[in-house]
Length: 86
Image 1 (cartoon, helix red, strand yellow):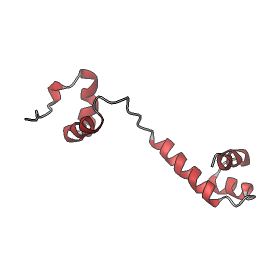
Image 2: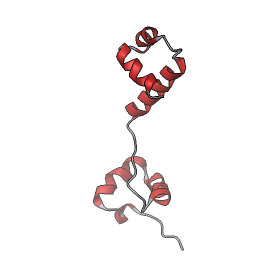
Image 3: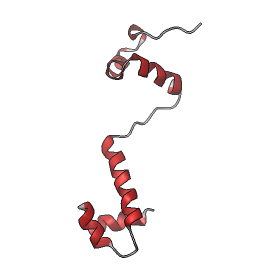
Image 4: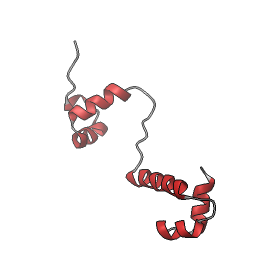
């Protein structure tokens, strides 16, 4: 018999999180990740940066550093660093 998770069962430090995402989503998270290693959830800015860097790597033709710097509003040095880490 499966016990239904209720808000009052949660540790105080988890209650705010559960109230933000809702108990059904929190229950699913426990089902998937409960008891495992700490879960890392990236910030949206990190996901956007990773997506931008993949586009830069895809657009890179071996010599268009300046063009990509202008297109993505970055320095040529940043473009070089991004394409070097393919």
